[in-house]
Every structure is written in C-alpha cells, then in structure tokens.
Length: 79
Image (cartoon, rainbow, N blue to C red; front, top):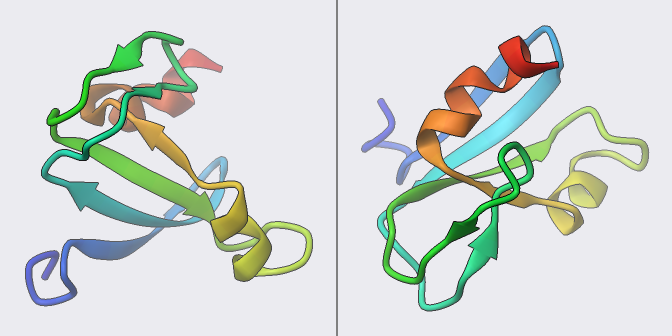
C-alpha cells in the first residue's frame, strides 16, 4: 500500500492522527525530534506531520518533522 501511495500513509495512534511518508534520503541534514541526533544527508528516514493539528493538516504539514525510522516507530513508548 505504501508503494501505491508513493510511500505516504495515514496513521492513527495514541499521540494523534498522522500523515507519514518514507524518504529514501534527502540532500539536507535533519535533526530527529525523538533522539535529537542528526539524520545525515542521503539517509532513508520518515517525514511525518499531524493531520489533527490546530489549523488542520495544512498547519501540520508546515510543522512536519524528519525522524529516524526506528525513532518514529518507538516514539509513543518514549513519552
């Protein structure tokens, strides 16, 4: 299903409603909001934004974050 949607999917979790996209690797360095470590350029990772953000999904998209894939999967357990 991910592949059919271009790697984008919707996730309902205890921490809200999310749009999640897997990225093969970008040309920038990002900081993961869970572990606060860098995601080096070219590293596969996850981009996620809240669908239920105040102001709607467009507002969530503006505040999207780049996560290590493993950090994204365990984010709820770390709260």
